[in-house]
Image (cartoon, rainbow, N blue to C red):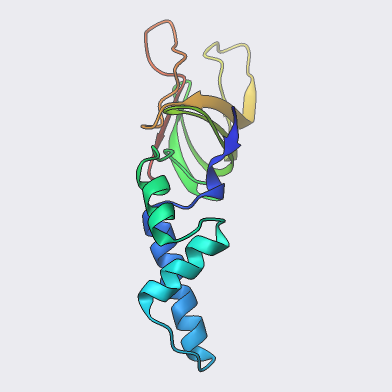
Length: 146
């Protein structure tokens, strides 16, 4: 069963949302506690309470990238910088990522022929490495922080 990973925030993201909510409400003259802000964030994501969101997000493997992230990496031996335009959880520890490259990369190693790609869609593990390999054993795609 496939589902969008970005629907449930990670714990740090949820805490950041609660902090921002608390700050915005304080700016509007309504003071709430941090725990109340956490409860509101949990409800906004469809959970009964913060403990339920915490348990669900804490037990879930995290994808190597999130929708909208800027990431760097190597694709078929070529370095790239890209925006993450899609992340889908496929099964435990497997994610389909779609990347829009800043600059197209040539994925052919022959001097007399070129094939430029500006968009990549691959299935990766939680570390950001694709399961498919080149003939020398290197992963087709490796994601890393820019």
